Length: 334
Image (cartoon, rainbow, N blue to C red; front, side):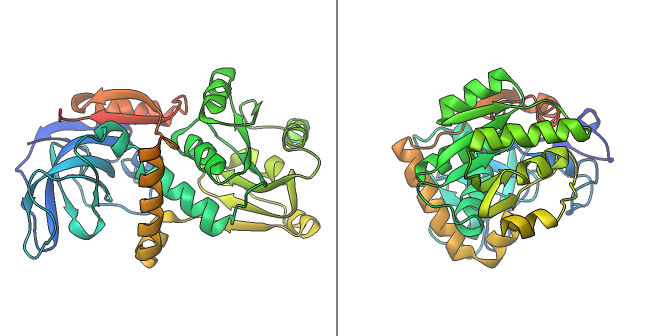
């Protein structure tokens, strides 16, 4: 089978298309024919050895996939060849076939779009955990989303609206603002590119305050970090919840006096650990997401689709922070 391998640490240009033996499923595992693999920010980091998990090389990046079961391992019940599924693994998705644990596989219907399916669980799973469990978002509250035109940001717009919030989407261009409004955002704010000096940071904080209104943002969803974090925190409401999701713009340092003055919380969102520690709650979230997907209340927006031999370009596209929505590698036809 063909796969896109990381043999040495480096950027997307270091990935090599190679032929490797097709793996065999072990006990409790499924082998799937991969239909599509969505690219996420950890894929940018993992090939450079900058992620917390470092798989032994060579390995294929790509954690979020849709596929068709073509072999069932010992002890697996309820799955047969030909079943459709989506799954999130640590790596291995940029390949024509991969092994996934049966316990974590999520069944989808035969007529479900495999590209949308591949782009669903990582971002929407993170977001529903963040907004429900960590942010405790309530209907009628105001939700401010940074980086709102990326895959995870758009998922936050859709889920925030599904939960009855007023959604303010912060983005870096008018084109991205249009995408955020299309996804359901009530208001948008276009900010400049950091880093910011003191005056720039102050101006951004005021722009956030103007956008969320005098009461402030009850929940702030931050998958960006960097110089955007402190200005956003300054717009938080009394007893608001600031959700720390990711750091593509860098790891910020927040002045803790702001948390005292606003009686607000800064809460970490570690979806992978939540899935491992709370599998039943995760399953309940997944069922809710699948229902919303079937009803058309959420729908992953796909920025671009690449073939397997251009998977490195897909990772580079995401790393550029220019994508609007998800970037997906289509590996096989249905």
